[in-house]
Length: 315
Image 1 (cartoon, rainbow, N blue to C red):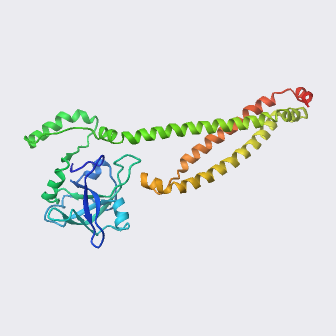
Image 2 (cartoon, rainbow, N blue to C red):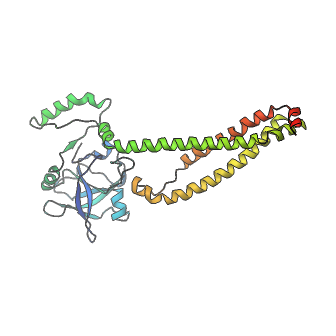
Image 3 (spheres, rainbow, N blue to C red):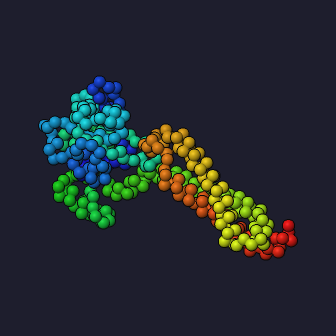
């Protein structure tokens, strides 16, 4: 699979134009068939490039979802796009829309991208692109990619003995170097989030433990009057769970309000218009509920072991 650019890292931006619209810049990639399956980029609408997309035929293009939504209003199939206007450019009909790629990491923006078949891309446009970036070739293999180094060098030497190979890297290493800053940011965010969750759980435990411990004499008196330990534990847990439930409901409401406030931020960074993650919210709520129940249960067990006569003497 050949391409002017890989789907990660810094990319080349070229001027584009839509008939009847304002010029804009978008990333450009000339690719051979098999590019999208090789990198796992899903086709959302239309068709992929095939062996019939050759020079002399109708010029076609594929764009990503970002470009389709913000330039064509989500209806891009069959529309025309001018790639790099001038003698080096090409006017192409859009035949497909593919998913966005997080080429700058999970916190990076989702730029507009235009793909052209390598076989249809004018030579002058290829020269413009290669003045900024070399051609890339990618091979999807089974097993360790580094084990194929010598085989790939020999294959290139047989086909083009004078063609040098500038560099050979695995896509995993390219992704790792490209997303190093984003991964560090996510690690720090994760550490602070875990610390906040631990502090919230500890604070909830402390509050509930003090609340139950303050009723130790009442629990002892109830035992002296004939209440069983199981009934007392159920009574304490019921009161504690009600208080915890009220707090969780308030917390969920505040979370939904905060999610709406963060909507634009999440769209700008992650390409999504929702900052609400129900599974994360459920996990945090369950963790806090467990911490609160333990905070009620442990002091209640201690209070239930208080001798009734000791409690009566205290009264």
